[in-house]
Image (cartoon, rainbow, N blue to C red):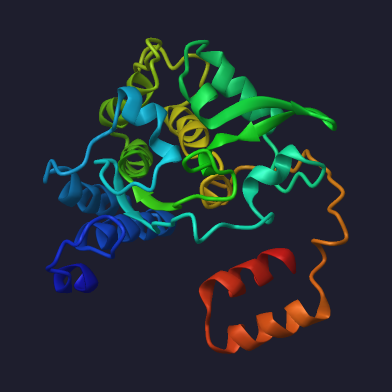
Length: 276
């Protein structure tokens, strides 16, 4: 909250801002189970009417741009064609490497509504010499599968943070209102009500399913959702990672330790993730 109060300049969504700090703080409160504070913090952003759920072609193209002008992005890292990710990117699940894979339960959820626009915006079927694979569309910018401007916080995620907190506070009608806003944007007409949760046992279950679909492939949200809510973490996929990519070479490990001492978050996170 103190950081937010010090950020008086708004230089655009590719820069840290007061609202970016609020979005991060809301997620921290969610992880800590301080649900009233989640709602209060999210409301600080929503009451400004600065952000919205983009629709139409803006939604269709949302993950193919650098987010320089859209009204959904709160904070992102804007990248250009000189800053590509070589071959070590999430989209390379299309080849034999399969660093990321679309699970059957997620595909079942996306197919459940039949008209869910996220199915075609987020995932597509591609065929090459290795066969037909699911391809993650969320990290392809301007047609370049090696280029992406990652979004650290966006309005949809903020609404879903609030929805989860509201569900845990027993404010079910408000929680479902946030969830239904996300579903309507995705082109769905089968909305939730307290009397019809469409097969879910609780409002929280509905919220978590929506988070799974809307935030799929974004910064490990699903894992945090499961751990935070004491849900089982099921790893149903096995894969053979190519030896020229993983495990890291001794030189790479030395670099990881070098940057770890200097607290480089990207290298440190990668190292921790791959060495659990």
